[in-house]
Amino acid sequence: WAGFVLGGAVLGTCGFLFAPQISRALEEDGRLRLPNLFDEEPEDIEDLDLKAQQGVLNDKIADLNSAIDRVSAQIETATTNPDPQLQET
Image (cartoon, rainbow, N blue to C red; front, top):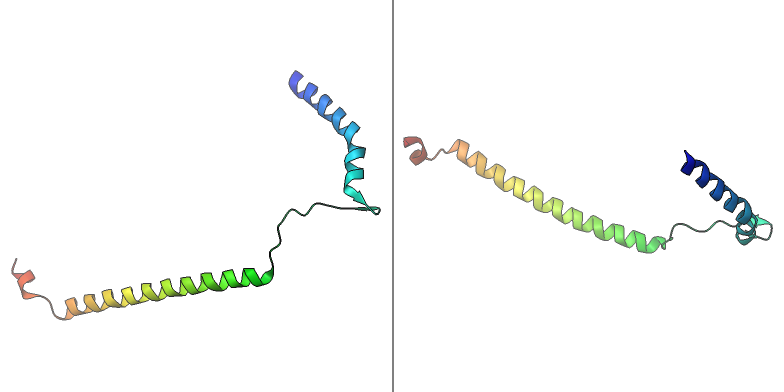
């Protein structure tokens, strides 16, 4: 409890003493100026990145679809024309 009370007292005092200076540093033309926390990228660059990623994903989906088609064809062939050598064992 002692650390909690002592820490609260010390940090509360620091906040009380430095709050006016911090407020003046943030204030400009009578308005509070908040720092920009997010880096804004131009929308054109974002659109290009999204389009490039979409193209890559479309290519991967096409590859997966063709692989599924090949496996389906192999399974269909195996079920309609069973190999007689495998049935003998």
